[in-house]
Image 1: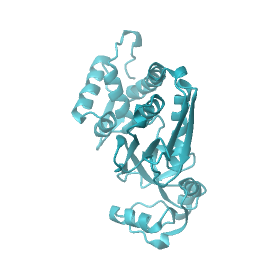
Image 2: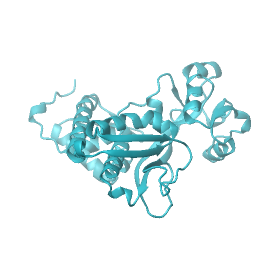
Image 3: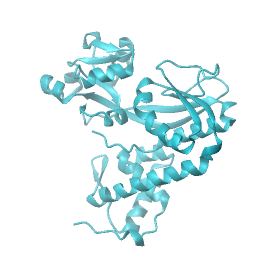
Image 4: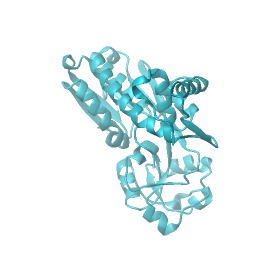
Length: 306
């Protein structure tokens, strides 16, 4: 039985709490450090200081990963609630909500637009209800300089001149399929076994093969007999049991009925960039949405991974 905590007697250092939260939800000090834009030793020291102040052990090391203890899991529930409250306070305090209006056009991939943006936009709408937000869900690179969008969310660093770009997160992805499909074909234990399964393509097959082969997955065009240029359609095909695909862990965690394939494999990592035109960044409505997108996208995922 772990030690009960007297919550009224604890004076939290919010930096320690943020480090604990990021570590708990990302699984390591190094991943938490990237999210928080701090060094790994700093995050480790802050978590250790929180453990000392509480008089409990929050993590136990298993291989290269950190697992929550039962006391850590109890604390995580309360800390997540604190983070949500703090975020709502921040939104209200910084937005001057009732005085900001006008339209903000955001472009992002169709998958991010459908799965990850709505809860973020809900928070922004609560804080600035007079804003008009238009989401341009597209997988091509819209030109901010030609005002096709005010803010772009991209997985490659924008190179156009006169843009403000900010790296807000490094996301992870794994292979996913439905349990029913894996029951039928068998659960692969190696990359070679994985390459014998059906893959659902998203976009150009040659590009996908060029991404997977160097990563040790010896797939060929024969693996890709079904797919779509739409990420949403491809992901639905996976969800309907048509094969395997790589997907963001955050999106997979929001999707019932999918299972991680080769769960012990190192994740794919990809950046999340925000970009806007330097002139637009001075507009209050653009600055508000840009800053809140940066804050929300850089926050540790609130959804447990499957």
